[in-house]
Amino acid sequence: MDKASLGTVPVANPISSFVARQGAAFVAISFGISWLIWIAAIRLGAHPGRGEEILAFGSPGPAIAGIFLSRSRRKAQTIGPTARLLWFLLLWIGCWAAYILSDKMRGVTPHPSASFSLIVALLALIPAWIGSGAISSDTGVWSLLRTLAVPQNWRWQAIAFFSLPAILLVPTAILHALGRPLVWGRPSTAIGPWVAYGALMFFRTLFFTAFLEEPGWRGFLLPCLQRKFSPLVASFLVWIPWSVWHLPLDFGGPAGRSVAAYFQTRVVSLLLVAAILTWLYNRSGGNLLCVAIFHAGMNTFPVVLPYAPVSLVLVLTWAAYAVVADRMWRQG
Image (cartoon, rainbow, N blue to C red; front, side, top):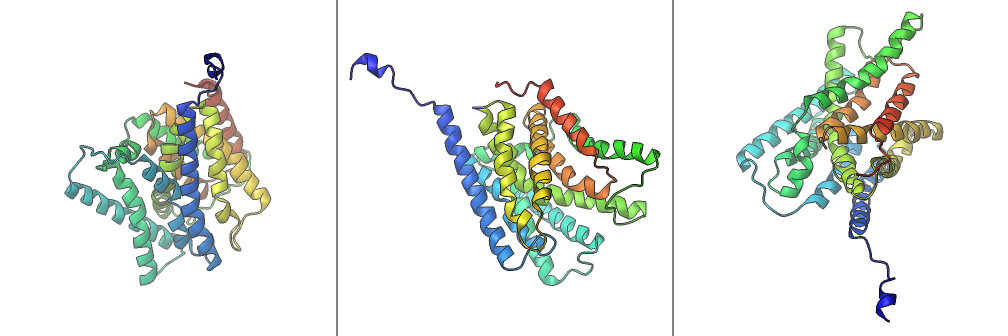
């Protein structure tokens, strides 16, 4: 083979190869952990609405995958082991309390049994371990998770927290002023218990949903994909496994969703939310706490606040604004 022909041989792009390998490994580990636990638990009789604490053991698949693939085996100069253990214990107690108390307030377990409390205590070890990774002694894990405990810019945390209540309340208030009745899942008519329930549910979803997912989807996979693709394409490529990942929960057991409900939730709504979360992540400088707050609010506020179907139009408007304002179709 002469030099001229050598020059025509395509050279593999190392960035493309790295992104492909890391992305494939992340999806394989995430799905492997989550689906194995979920399918086994569903076969044993657990399903959304019954045995949620058992199914939750499968939810940290994305976070575990991100942590595993981020390890560098190089020591980070963070805090000492005693302070790290104390931080872990405080997170563990907070996670356990949020789960138990929120279940009691919504009447699911008015008198939790010893076995239920033990299962929740074991489950709470997982988000506590993930949260304590923010002060990990491994530089790769610390780099991945440090912003899960560091707000950095309170303006973006405030946007992440208050945007969804505004999206829900503004159209609802307008419709209510026009004589339409309020629709919400509030468990109590008293303001005090309602606020307490909302706060507990927010922290529960923050610890047991956002902490278990966002270190993987937005903490690891999104920045990995943005090395090769534009934010818009990266959002789409995160959305695909994110939506498919939920399949065993969405269709498992007697509480499974219909195809129409799955399409509305995982295809339409989640695709819009994926673009918004990418926008929040990039605008906040890659702050995981910001997207975790939004994710927790997404699972909490529609349950505790009044809402109207027209709210989805505002979500669509926000996603469109994010794409156009930041020109998310451009790379770099």
